[in-house]
Length: 56
Image (cartoon, rainbow, N blue to C red; front, side, top):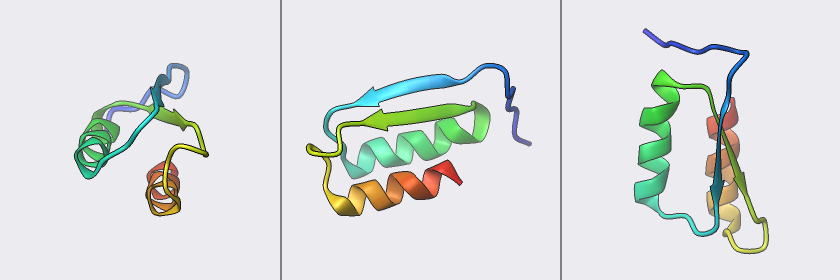
């Protein structure tokens, strides 16, 4: 069961990203409404694609 409150969003700023971070965000996204923000110049294109998938 997902608990998401559309009024409140947890914003996470990321400078560098690893697979471990992605796993953490996937788990946290199950329970919270999170938004992940990042510097496009510091994160690889592959990781950007994964983050876009989390948005959906």
